[in-house]
Image 1 (cartoon, helix red, strand yellow):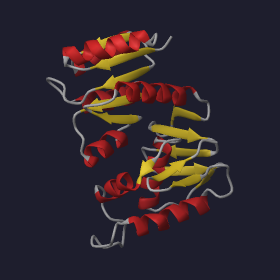
Image 2: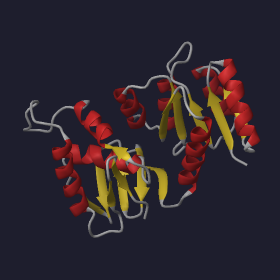
Image 3: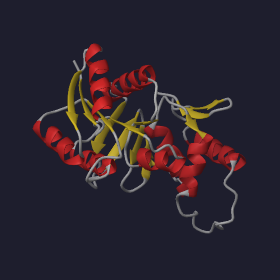
Image 4: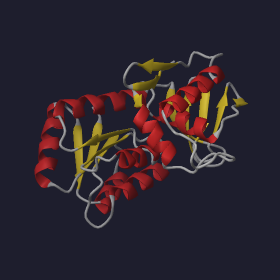
Length: 239
């Protein structure tokens, strides 16, 4: 039986989530603030977190950052009223495994939570510590060191531009899920331009296709495949 920590300051929503998850035979722990969430995580092991960002006293992003530093590989699903693309990118880049905005569909939340927990249990996708002490992601023969922003494929370092790294990191963080074109373009716009690239250089779907093509060529010798999901975006298939 999996144990889920819900960090939410709305008592009505907290009760509803707790009841729904208990019906699915989850064990549930609750917290109403960042400090309470840290206390729960220090006291016992949990299998995943449902995390609100708009918490009293301190922002939920602080708990996400703290949890990522303390507990490698702990699955985190952000559940928040912050629905901007920049907010989603910030949360996912900070280490969240999924991001759902309020109001939400309870069945979708349950499905995403269960999918997140399944991914965390799969040996092909693990969180470990890199030699530099930062978190890393491993999918088959591909290893990403998020701290140094480097990737190794079958033991050999990949030569990646900044934009290629950002695209690959998004695809790996959401392996098996669709990454929309808007998500990628928003991540690019939120970061500085590549060395030698003008700030006026276009960031659009045509440019994205070029970078996807480059990444596919660099992963071509493996069983890692970047699929084009028509009308939506891209998905990195699980090995």
